Amino acid sequence: MLLAEALIEKDYINKSINSLYSVIRDLSMAYDKVDLKFNKEQLKDKFVELEELYTKYQQYSIMISRAKSVTIVINETEVSLRDAMVIRDVMNTKLNNFSNLQLVITKNNPDKIVCMDKEELEKMVDMLRSDIKTLDIKIQSKLWNTEVK
Image (cartoon, rainbow, N blue to C red; front, side):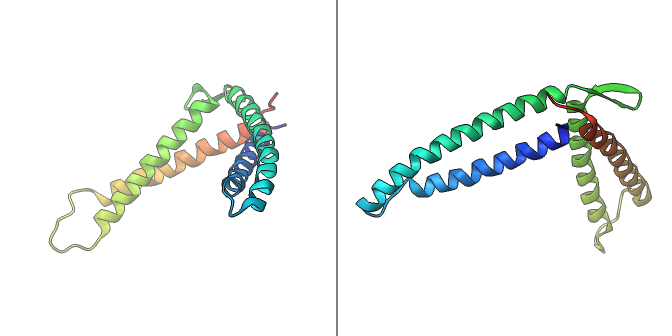
């Protein structure tokens, strides 16, 4: 199984856990004694199913964590895939902040004077987008070419 496939499966298991939790929450209260008996029986089965899902989720989490220790090269520096994903997240946060700043300085506010070079900020945003795209391509390539055990 490829790392990307394992991530998709882990996400599916997580959604299944959340869905099953909703069912358990609904079954945890009854309106009358007939419902009470039915709900108690259903809850036993649902908790067994939930425990199995958590076991699978844990297995996939461990498998994915181990696989993310493979290395990737960024700007001639070798880092783990896990670290590359963190770097990408930080770069995306930075991009969001700079993009918001672009909106602030491009607002037409006659009472204020822009103190920043709009073109310079635009170059920074464009460069950041390009760097994120390049990094994301490397990450995706590793995700789709790394076998998990």
